[in-house]
Length: 284
Ligand code: PDD
Image (cartoon, rainbow, N blue to C red; front, side):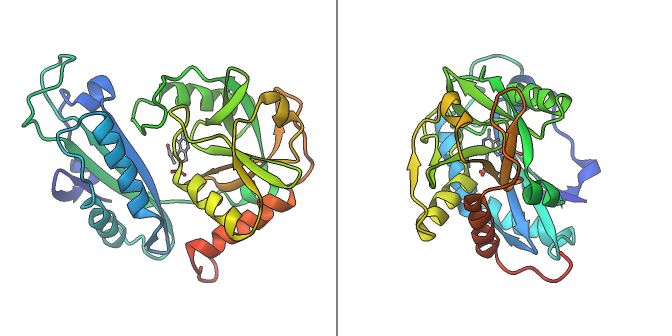
């Protein structure tokens, strides 16, 4: 596969990054995952804007990543991924410099990496629904930044795997925040509710699209905290994100939420999202 590193396209196996890179040493970096549907990148600008937002918050020396849109397109084309489902991974770190906590000299170039690969949509999960577990949200207070420091997410997701679940939902102070790589929606009396966009969650691109779809479909929607107590009584729970798209949750294995099948709201949102991402050729 062809990847991109600091202005050059090269074989992914040839990519090398310094052991002094601050991404490697401090997780001092940001990332994005963008979906490509048959060569059409989905919501690229929203992803790149979020990366710029993160770069400003982290005080990177460069904060405009608009150029990565063309890089993403090139990686899809050059890797022969335009005919099916794929993802593009983008990562930017504060660059390589001898290890010290303070920022490196201003002129230190950021390390910019991008790659693309085939993606198999989680069709069975989206169709039949998934189980999740609840885990305490032990993350830092800037979950609105999509940093590469994902250890709590990795541990929580593995815990979900070990429990036979597909995702872990974080819970902090009795309210749901989000999943390890997804945002959460619940339905109460036909109304969709998702936690508000604060520093406690990532402002998910799919979350924004789903909010938009709710308005389009005239599904009442609110951005408000969902307590664990309320979640137990939800008619529907769903997780949304670039990779999970819109996936129904059937059970919270370590709590009492149980449903036997996906509900009507998740089905409408799935259909609307499918429409939004554009036509698919037969067999894909
Ligand atoms: N994760 N919340 C967290 C913590 C995430 O890591 C993600 C995405 C989301 C959903 O955001 P979006 O709709 O913009 O993909 C919410 C990516 C896919 C990942 O880490 O692989």
